Length: 308
Image: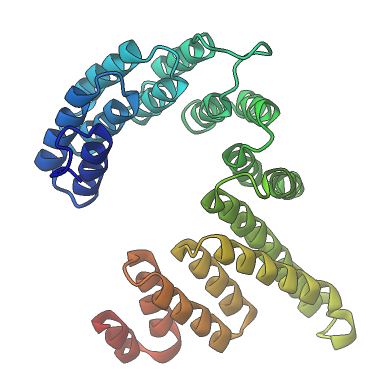
């Protein structure tokens, strides 16, 4: 593509992103610079370049310069503010992150009803939750994100995750179900997969609690096992839907842990093997498999899994 059109900013930016993913920081930086020179008004390139500098390059100071340049090149792009705010929050500057998000809500180009970028509010929720531990304010921000755009799957997912961490499983399940209904067919498949996986994990936890109660209080009476078995099937259905949308290693791992906790070691191994076939380069699914083999077949089997 670049041989055909050497100053194609989009090809240069894509190439830079590839080099960044491979860990080639200097090559990525040069390509981002060339892309920005080819199209100085493209804020997305500058944001991606800033992410590189913050994570593996010259640090937050250089990233700030690039975020500021991106804002000056495209003052109405709220995504510049959300990315910049998260960078500040990661470095402990939650106050600075909040100020940036306040600027995002005042950016020009609003629809008549107000800001239309739900990501601004879901990012605000993240900052309030993770960095300020202000759960009420975070919940209000997440609520505003899904009211701004009821198809914003990330808002439902983050809100539900926070509520679950607070011990509000019922509230989390309701939010996930609302997200699944509201975002079906319009949200990105990877975001929908996260909703289904989270719902599956909630149902898995409910299943395991029900099974423990059944074993403790019902003496293993098979006639009274129906409730938790129904929850188990619901969890499997949610995991299956998540994998149909996006074959993520995290989903395979969560499903396998559930089957193992239920005592079905063969089913758990089958899920892990499917995960290895679908995500052969994902380190986390290999770690799960090695540990699983060590628990159930011993160290020799774990070593064989490592060699694989």
